Length: 268
Length: 296
Image 1: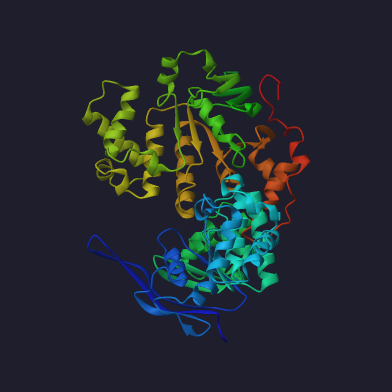
Image 2 (image 1 turned 90 degrees about the vertical axis):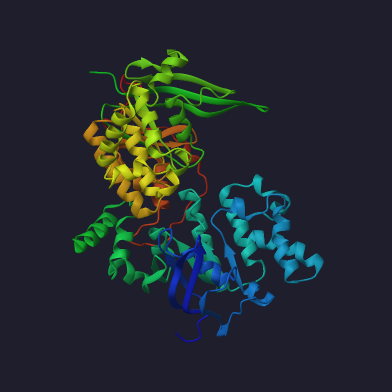
């Protein structure tokens, strides 16, 4: 891959709990191309959130390196690194400070990174809200006064506030109803096209992955078992674990059931 | 014809608040025949979980709850029973499984001790040895390897999938005629969820248990239920046999729900209209799925 925006090179993370060593992420290497949406899928304990946390710099890898635009990220991140990579979490109710108005939450990254002058920043929060499909006067509201979908839109606006180019989305729609999920997924797609963003989309929902990702990396117990284009993953999954994941998805149409049946047949 | 296991007719529920009475169920009717698996599917806030809690009788105790309508269980009007009679039904004739198995088991008692408590509900005189033997047999039925080890364990020592199986075994321990399952397995991984659903389906089929299955996930409903009621904002909007509903959803709300679900075969992200007036159109009843007694 020429000039990837992010490269992981033999990244390993071990945690010590009660005298035992747990290898949460085990020798993982992959590149993320600028502008792509790479999905990271796996079940609980597969290491997908640990990878996200290392990319965000919450803790460093035990060994291996993570490079952003060719520059290996140090253990202590500079402000510019933190500005470039942003996060949207699963539950917007807990990721937004309940005591801050929406406007104050959106303004914080602008203040931290010194973007625009003071009067401009307030204006900017309104523009951000409009960009994610909310009225600008939502600035004065508390998160508790918003619906789940509206809150997630605010969390997305916050991630975009400091013009980052890589967004880590950690199960961004898992806590939402299906109609709301569909709208948020469309919004994410539009924002990516408009702003040329790169997404690292972490999820366990393969039906979502099929419709939003360009490539898919499948994780099992800290190891990456398969990485390929989305089309290939779903039509010709190589690893039995990937086949198992796809055939466990609860589906609603006959075509989907046929796809699942064909995968389980190969298994037998 | 014998009475259906569960019959709900024109059920209203409101809560008294400072701002007056807020109605959350606007008169819903549904029934579950003997041995039938019926799903009530809807989004958050649609009223599906409160319906389940009304059936088991947990919500009526809440101050400010205003309930009207008919709730009939095996031909008996539940609202006419005394508190003691209703209490006697719970855990014996009807039982419930909740979303998160690990938090619905008590962390400070072993699985065995909790199992014995459940069995005592139906057989107060059962001794420990007999209870453990019966519990082991029940755990064996939900394909738990080494039941003796599981009975001696605390819930936090077991995986979520294992706890879910324990919950299923406990819920069915006293041979209830009605099992209420509120989003079972939503907190679990997809592969584990798929396994436990299949398992639960097999076990209830073998026991002839009727099930009220509450879910927001249409895919899960399709794999589990014989019949489906779709609920939206406290009203049933469509009722049909599972295959008919998925082949031919007729209510605008059901159609929007179906469209909104991303397909594992691809096809892109659907355009979803905003909350539509049409979602409030009247109930659509598919052929042969009306309520007993002719009242829809």
